[in-house]
Length: 393
Image (cartoon, rainbow, N blue to C red; front, side):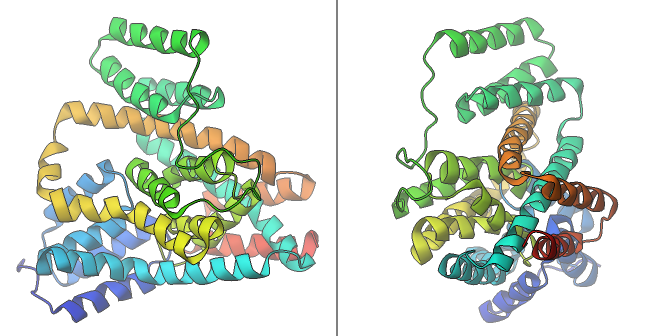
């Protein structure tokens, strides 16, 4: 029998979701299953059907689904303040651990030969992790030939340095037209976009950061880091891996306060922590602006994940049943797959610089594809670091 969610005290509610955060190993699938097992099967806060319907809402929206589910269940128990406490409890362990690792990384650097070699070994494994993610996201997102074509077009547009907001908007509208059988209109849109690309001066891709010349160009302002995180949080359709192209562009390409190698190190650290992978944004913020930068960028990333539930969950639950919205979001998600692929090519050029790196990449990719345990990512990263420690030093 299903009972109403318990009206727990605020401290008890916070500690419940803090425990979830401490046990959040193994990526989003494992995290969501832990929440489902505890609150649906064991304590029966909601029915299985309601849980799946709620999960479907968050799978359509940007942001980490496991974190958004925690905010949702906290709000069911004690209103908006309960949702805020539940979300903070779930993210706090990963944030504090990433903050500590970022401080150690920035403070001690990689000047020591063995440490530098360990991180050099991890970087090819991170590229393998992202390649596997492209495959997994692609299988879910690219379910039709048209979606696959949209993803390829987005990849080409990114390589041609088309503004990514134009790419994503075009991807969404293009697929909506194709899915509704309006191929003539889709062709006109595609020709117009191509003509704009080749005949009109393309504006520089916007970024909250001024132009810089390399990673040593100086620290960005805190509002810029917050805005970068906020935009990333609003565009992460399909999981944390979709945040990679946006943060990499702001931090490496446009902002210039990180290198691709440092960016890969941050993803590697995020992959071994009990947290949504998006927590690597804390590392990016720390490198860009120290402790305050880490707080600013993390707050920007997670603000949408809190706001969608605390402000408008009931409206969103109704809106996601609109077929027109589905078509648009499906096209945008396909476009994001193309953007991730383009960014991965850029990261691979930095990480796969020799035979040893290629061997580590291949071994990590095969292992991650064949081994599906929740702790596989953490163990692969540790093994890659050990390989680098022994082989590349």
